[in-house]
Amino acid sequence: MPFSFINNTNQKMWNDTKIILKTIMKEAILLKEVKSKTRVNVVLVHDDAMHEFNLHYKGKDYPTDVLTFVSDEEDSLADIIINVDACVRQAQEYEHSVQREFAFLFAHGLLHACGYDHDNEENESKMIQRQKELLREYPRDLKESSL
Image 1 (cartoon, helix red, strand yellow):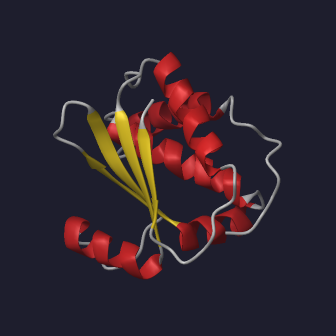
Image 2 (tube, helix red, strand yellow):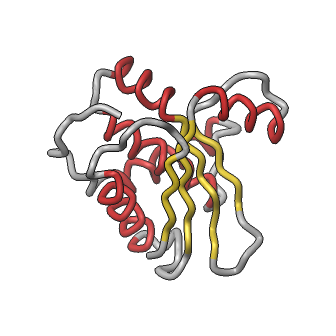
């Protein structure tokens, strides 16, 4: 399961980042959401860069937590951009680890790449259920560390 990981922030990531990505990708393969040879690119940014992406590509004048850009290439599924500032804020708000929030955001972005959306209650319910399935094997014992 190939993926590329680009950290465009000045913050050091925790050691378990790739474990999180691999675990969720394995679940996505088992659930037949993605093929085993599918490439996913994950890019980490701060609020300011995410604000620019969201404004330029979505017409929304604020930073968001995750954006997904589906690829036209046969062997590449998507670029998933994760805002580390939002990840930290949301982890604090929901009172769980930053790693747990990162896993949630990655799974959410991956499902958007697979065609899921939350544009109405029915679709949102389906997406939430699938997201729970992707996260069920997520290693809960990851040590908390800072971004």
